[in-house]
Length: 287
Image: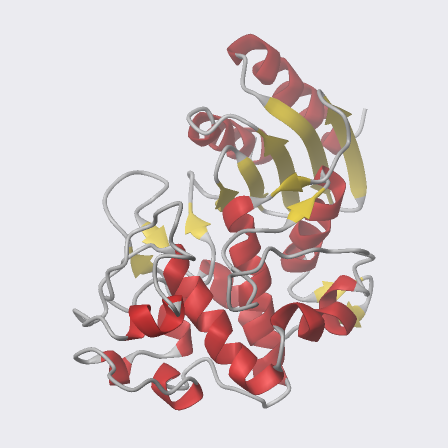
C-alpha cells in the first residue's frame, strides 16, 4: 500500500468514527494519489479557499509587473473620502487581513452599500491589526481589477486553463465584480489542483504559473491573528497550523492541508468538525 493510500484509509476511518461530514477526500504524497468519496462528485462552494485564488491573481499580476503587493490601495482604487490612515494600507495588507479596517461579515455584505470597496476604504484603519473580513479580500480584488480588468477573465488563461479548470463561475457583487473571498465551486479533485500547485511552489507539471516567492508568502511572514491554536497566525490566505502544517480553510470544512510533501484536500459540510479533522490530517502526514 502506498503512503497516500495509507493516509487516505486513516482519514476515512477517522471520518467514520467521528461522523465528520466529509463529501470527498484527495490525498497527494509525492506523485502518489489516493481518493475517497462519501457523496456525489459535484462542484461545491469552496468558501474561503477562494481567497487563495485572489492571492494567486495578485501574485501573477505582480510577476507581470502590473502591480506590486506593496502598492497603496488608494493609488490603485481612489475613493473620494478615505478613512483615517487608510492611505497606508497596501494590497498585501488587504490580502493578509492586516489593514486594521473593521467591517464584519454579514450575509448581506455585498448589498448593504452602493460600493462595498468604497465603504471599506472609507472606514478608519487602526494600523497593522488583524481584522478578518471578506470585505478585505473583495476590496483587494476591486483594486486589482482597476489594473487588470475582470479578475476571473484575467485568471482564465493564466491559471484556470493551465490547471484544466473549465467553466469556472465566480459569484458577482451587484457591481459586477467577483465577490473574491468566496463564490467559487469546485470538485474535490479540482480543488486539489490548487494544493499541488501551491505545494510545488507555483509550478504545474513543470510550467511556472506564479513565482515561488508568492507561494512562500502564503505560509510565512505570519500576521498575529489571535491566541486560539490553528487561528493564531495568518499569511496570504493561509492559516498557520495545526501543528507543523498549514492550511487553506473554507467554511463548512473545505480544507487544503499541507505538511511536508503531502497535501490533503477535503470537501465537506461540517463547520464545527473541521478543526479536529485538520489536526488529524497533519498527524497522519507527519507520522
